[in-house]
Length: 199
Image (tube, rainbow, N blue to C red; front, top):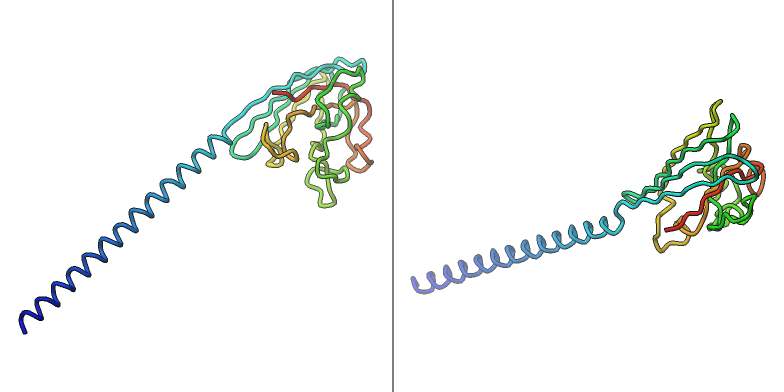
């Protein structure tokens, strides 16, 4: 009888130890999987890490408008920071246009607004639609200086998504303000500055 009891106790202890080892192995596998996923996330962050790109703006249509537009990508968002000189006092539209081509004296070689999702023109975020290149207006002071900052997750710098990648397009500043209503471009007047977005 004692032999049977000892045997059963031994089997119970072995079973218990085996369960503990299995749980330990499962925990270790879980930890390894979690570490691997963290590493993949870090690698993804590195791939989508901070990128910067600077665009030099040139005068068009007989203007003296110059400036610099800096694009910075970080954590899945792109921030555009721009500053200009030589503008007439008041509001001026700024957009991203479809072609990285500022060769025409009037900037028309840049084409129309960048609109990869085939929406109507409108104010950014409008429920009725807006172009991916519809940034909006900025205000120049009495000395002709203007700045604007804009952040969105609908752009990227050099990614594989043609609907988000700003490379291969251009920045255009207009003589007038965007009315956010007129189609296809907001009746913002002539193009007074152009910069090609290239790597």
